[in-house]
Length: 193
Image (cartoon, rainbow, N blue to C red; front, side, top):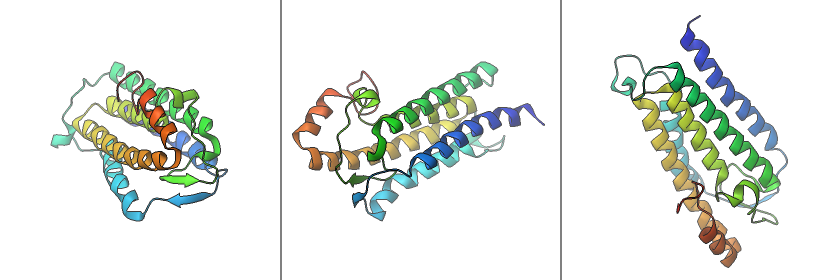
């Protein structure tokens, strides 16, 4: 059993545990009254899937995608693992905090509530922030060009999705959402964006 296999087993294990929690917590949500179209969903799922595949799949040692951008070291690996844990923990906190208003797709729920507390007081889309942080951590642990390209594609996917979501939230909450947008950044705490 190689050391690389052990290292990647930990990274994969973190993502599997997160995914199992995500599936289990998706059961108790409010009824959806409006849901995005298949084309809308495809606009952000397609780059997300390609980005995740770039990060998750091996590239082979001789391809351009395997080109190292970070040193192959235990320090890079463990920094990446720490960033994964931080990101997934933030996403779980946000998921727990939003409660039954949550949905994996862009939706409007029955009695939809504009949540502005907890992680939603730091960023408007803390689940995306947490997942992008964990994806970045995975790319750091990986350390190659494929990981960097995967992060970029995943970020593009989340920005597309949040723009759709923001348009819907402005329709539902009007001025209250405009104030929220003014007060709280979208993805990066303490930033203008």
